[in-house]
Length: 416
Ligand code: EPU
Image (cartoon, rainbow, N blue to C red; front, side, top):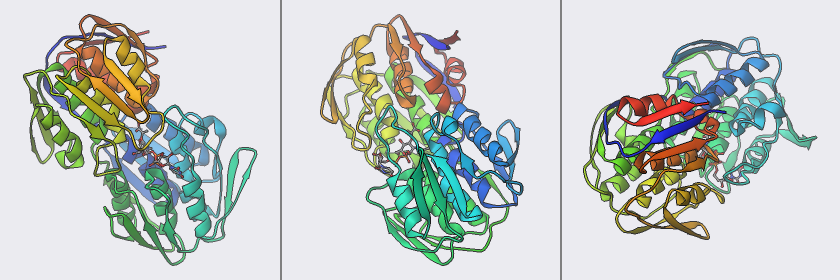
């Protein structure tokens, strides 16, 4: 099993190119199920979750050609509208095939995802929304079995804001009979990116980027060409790395307007940030100041940045609180950071961080994707060597992270 060996203490300087967004790429690949036409994608990130999704889609009969960051999809030959447990258990985002399969083929069989490291993460809202659109859904032997000759437009108000729930229902509604209104829709940029692709494919969607999406179903969708948006979480992860270690790094192929809230907090922490249309520069020459935050839906502070920002706060001057409101169990990095000398106490859904002068490297264990990223940042800021174990979590969502960090001066290597 691969590990990352980090020798901390280096200042980071140089350029990093950010990849396409994982959480946009995954639903966008599933949109390939909605049409018999060709989908031509650019800026596809090269990471494990994308490979897993492509494997699942190929199994259903989607034709896929990959050439670096370019992918061509064709869904003319899909013959197996099914997502088996073996695939879904490794990647919950597999649930995103449910809406498109049901809408185009009138039937889908998708394994129910189990619990996961960061919380219980049910998919009841996906199911309820499809039922409101006329689907007959039964749960048998751990599988969601959904049927509908043709879905019907409906007004759907989800109980909470759900990102993949919105994406599933949005994709389903594009081919439904009549108008669907999704109230309380997620406004995450990845949802917007998917909606923009769907419009290029011939979908009729109003309210893109708002919490009310109105979709007028069409009989069929056609092929399209699309560039996946930049990964705002990868961007934020590197910004936090520089804030924790000090340095001067320019991130390319990304957009500042995708992460206003995290950038505001980094400015409060003392980082100097500047940006242009497709780049962000971060300069940090002092010890960070502690900054409290609370995770919320977009455009608020993202739960996917909570752990990485905490890695800044642990070495900051002063104390801070990080309150997690989206997932009930997303503090698993805390115990590991404390092993490096951090001073963090958890009370309910808040982590109280007292900044320390220094961290000292130690072996640590990654438990989920963003927790892994936060341990890498902590390792970069620590004195001595940190060995991050179980980095398969990191590889799920970061495109060659250690190479990018090494290019800006970090001492980090992959060891088996
Ligand atoms: N929820 C329900 N029922 C549902 C759906 C959601 O109770 O039917 C709850 C969840 O348990 C959670 C909250 O609603 O407490 C929000 O969950 P959401 O559905 O928005 O999460 P998701 O769609 O499963 C996506 C990202 C996550 C990211 C969250 C929140 C993808 C593939 N995943 O998950 O990304 O943390 O939105 O922004 O888009 C990551 O990249 O590391 C990651 C975990």
